[in-house]
Image 1 (cartoon, rainbow, N blue to C red):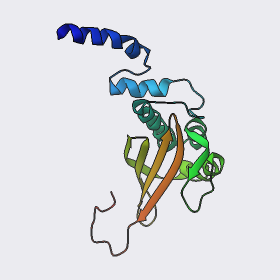
Image 2: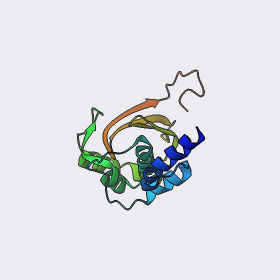
Image 3: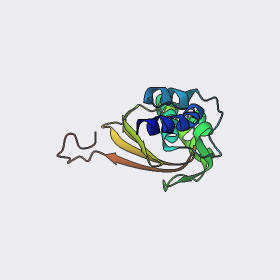
Image 4: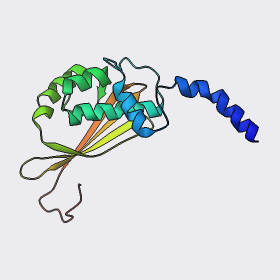
Length: 166
């Protein structure tokens, strides 16, 4: 049995060495960010692990750096499917709208996650008189973000739960 495990490991070694990602999540995240690509779109096939790191880089660029142009040009499909009833379809229209908002907005990313080609971000947006909750949901196809939904919630005046949104 031990010999079989060694043979299996040796057979898998070329695939492990060819992979741009290691088994250490910290190294994988750095590897995804260090890939010298101007854009992940049009999409190419990608494992869920690689998608997760591409998504983390997108979150860092859009929500951390507040660099809308770089985030959209690098990670968002030209023909983005947008589900907000007040937004136009496509990358250009959404990048233009968000370029006038995100660099000047005050917000905090509370949570983000990625699983099975879907990523989400839970954001606390500082608004007056009280903050609002925002959830952005993205779907990836391979290396490219191709679809977006968002949900916002304001705290109602008669709210009884002090921690309901955050």
